[in-house]
Image (tube, rainbow, N blue to C red; front, side, top):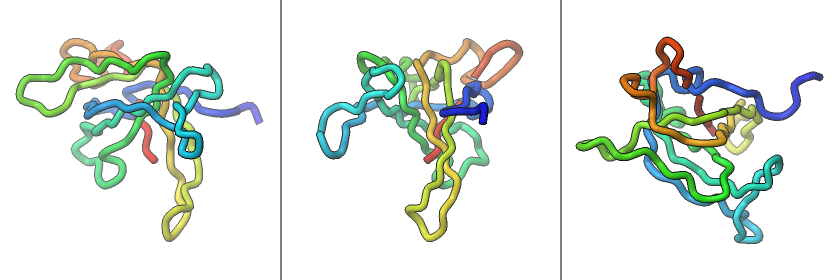
Length: 139
């Protein structure tokens, strides 16, 4: 099969209404307690907690984590006065489908990754418009 590994996606495909970051933390290996490393780049992995701005998103789809491979902790965009979270866009996103069999019935879930974070394009609030590109990890 020609498709191997994660599939590249645009930010606006995953988060058409934009996204908001709550925070970022290092991902540690459960057994070794050392930082988890990205298998492709060899860089440490960071988890950005994200809220989907889609008013229709519910349950597990409303809050997701996007993994970012970076040498140092990604710097989140500035807070918006009066809001407890930060508008965010992810660069070079990919999605990896997998089977989550931890519940009553197995389901298809998605792991989201990105190579960087940035402040949303001005005036778009993270939304895709014109040439502004914009993706999400749901587990």
